[in-house]
Image 1: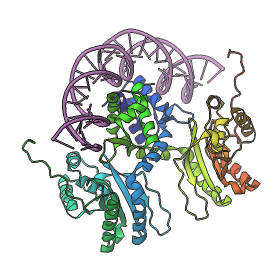
Image 2: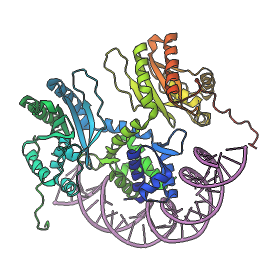
Image 3: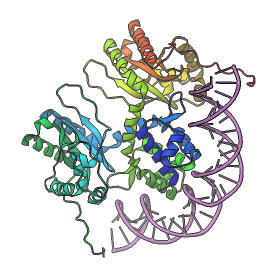
Image 4: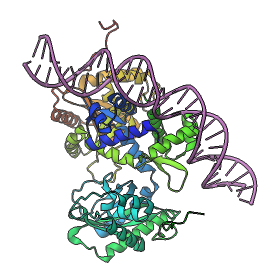
Length: 261
Length: 261
DNA sequence: GAACGCAATTCGATAATGTCGAATATCCTC
DNA sequence: GAGGATATTCGACATTATCGAATTGCGTTC
């Protein structure tokens, strides 16, 4: 990992958390000399990745990120393919649907269909949710055991009283998820909101995304038509991506203890 | 400018243009050794700014950009303040409205209100338009003459037959824009679409964004109620940001030829 | 209105760091 | 199954980023 780039990314990350920061504040946060941070920030600013707060000596994230992110979304094959299916699913179930991918310990929502009841709802594309507190996250973790085992080693944050932070409990859920291709979550990220999710698979059998339906906790558990709709949607998207089987095969079993020969 | 960061940004930029690239292709494009590019890409990947194309040896932009960009939008005070006014403007005029900021030679749309006629329209937030071909861009350039003069030195790209690429002609427009606080554009970016834009000013009198109304070229020129609506909207947003006067004062006159004493 | 103090910025010496070419591994094609 | 091309690893070298000190600029106080 190249040091300067690593540090630059950390600067972006800090600004992501704090919104507005001065050079000195950044330097403190990253435990680096101010002049070093200054150089990094100016370099990022030169590419529009960071911007000067209007009329101030503080810095914030820059507009180039918006342009890049727009291209990122356009680049995603899954997204383009999935959109019509999740829209259809939202229509049929009357519920809001999501498509998400993994970003380290989080799931990030790459597409969102609002509940078709005409009410005013916040667009969710771009939102991130800790993976362990999200049905989509659980799906993604269940199919990437190497990553999951790392995550379960660290302490997990509780978002609501209902967030499951016990590694053992999560591990059990993962097994169940791989078993039937469906993950659930009850009030674990947001009170009053629960969700169910299913994996999206590509040609080579990798789980590359998750589809979810958000169910108001008052309507929990969803009836089986919702569940079947979700399954069907995940299968349709996966098929369109060239996947062979759905639900996907269990991830390669964790290598047993003997050295690979 | 720190070399490694500069190069990393260029990698992102290349991926922005080409969507999917292998290490070798990137190396060719940037005229750098493959191993150097490899190091850069892996560092970016380590932060989710770049991602491996599923099942491939090629790379694309990464999901972290989406998260960053989302925070960027939330960070923007102008945007939060302007949203209700541009919505109102779209309602009153029956036309689509935009809010944009400058990103070097382009304007990037940070908020978009669809035409309220219920038709299906593409969301435009995140789109970028060459500044010289956009009414918002002309506003922003007109009020930052140092930048504008640099831009006019370089050859300008023509997007439609109607794009104005003659520096002299643009310079004349800039003077007019500063004069009455309104810029226009007729088919210069997209055929069939014209627009008018006005500056948004902050406390210190800086033009930090532009508001625009998109007018179908078949309805051009817009009648004066549209124009007044735009003026009023720009003034309202600016006032909410703490601006004193609107339209903004002319930018500091270009220093005359004698050396500053 | 002047002086203080803090924060941002500039500068230059130092050595740590990234860079690059060659070697190796891996993937895809024929 | 062999060949070519591409990605990846490795290590020596010198370029390059880093850091501390000095300077500038700004906001705040008296």
